[in-house]
Image 1 (cartoon, one colour):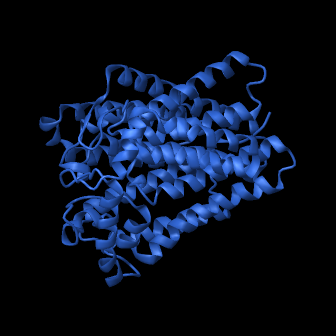
Image 2 (cartoon, rainbow, N blue to C red):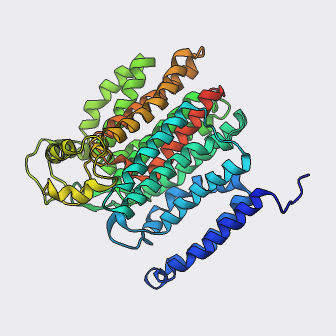
Image 3 (tube, rainbow, N blue to C red):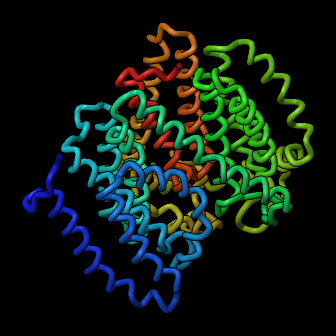
Amino acid sequence: MKTFCLFDYRVWLTVMLSALLGLSWNAFTPIFDIKPLFLLAMPCTAVFFLMMVTKPRWTIALIILTRPLLDIVLDSTRIGSGEGGIGLGAVLNLGVIILVVFLAFYLKRFPWENSVMSCWVIYLACMLAAVLYSPIKMESVRMWSNYLSYFALFLLPFFIVKDSRDFLFWIKVLGFSFVLPILLADVDMARGGRYFEDAGMRIAGTFTHPNILAFYLVLAFTFFFYLLNSGYLKSRPMVGLLIRAMMVDILALLVATKTRNAWISIYVGFIIYAVLKDRKMLALLIIVVPLFCCLPPVYQRMESVLKNKTVGRYQSANSFEWRRQIWESSIPKILQKPVQGYGLGTFKYMSGQFSENKHMGAHNTYLELAFETGLVGLTSFIVLFLSQLAVFFRNMRSSQDPAAARIWTLMVGYVITYMLICSADNLLYYLVFNWYVWFFIGLMVVAAQRRYPVYA
């Protein structure tokens, strides 16, 4: 039985973190008058730290299960205009990062030798360098902290998964985390959604924008497809039936989000899967496209791509034309500083200098990174994804079990899809979605590298 030791470094780490929290709390005092919800932060943070020290496993499970439900609530606590504001979401981000640091010290290990981890460290170092010469330091720090939280979620499975039983436990936790957001999105759809200037009535569920919900649903669909093909549900036919019903529901919700990039991403991902491992599915996917395009919301959104009319300065009816214009106008600025860029988060800040659309993202992650962090940062981002892709592709090729090979093929398709959608959307801005993407990828990388069974 372990006994309490005053000289244990973990005790002093907890004391220092608590003292730091207490000293920094004075800085938030003026905010209480503006946002009374901030008063909840202190007791919630105290409970979080107490749980982190005593029950880290259940703290992580609680975060995974509840975070998709909190997006709108946390956004309502934001102080400041636009995305540059700060709220309780930033406190939670910091808490997750501290939790991972605590686990690293507590378990006395860090997977430095892992090649994927090295790519993450290089990427974060490049992004941090871009913070140092950015003219908008606060926004740059905020964005970098978001990226750091993505890394934290990716890193968590390396600490919390000790064997194949742990892997299955966290797969179950991730699966349950999708259920409530999907059901609440159903409620939003039943109510008719809300009006958006670019596409009329759309649903966003528990998220702040329909696009975030859409890409979250694509991830959920991919995850449930994995479960159905994993063999874990062979002895539970009723659960398998419920998951199939939920997948049909997800497709209906995807239509209601009216997010074209999400439609393309889910289709491309499964085209890749079908070409590599399941040619029978390819015929089905080819048949589904014309039927899908006959749905009125889909037809209207696809038709808008062919229109030349523009609406306001935000979203053009011809969204590809709008994107093309901002991409072309930003390239001369990129060529002026091709190596290091202008600093993290500067694309929106400087967009008024080369485009009529002020304070707008590029809707192209690669171009935006080239603008903000230059070729160095862009290369580190691409290499980061290629490292994950290499892990899954290697397992796909080497797996002797056809069922397991199909699962690794699914992961290859999903990573390629993510990289593809980065060319047409501000995917790195979607914090909650990226948390779950990186936690899922982290789980699968751990299973791949440690040879845990992904098929029962």
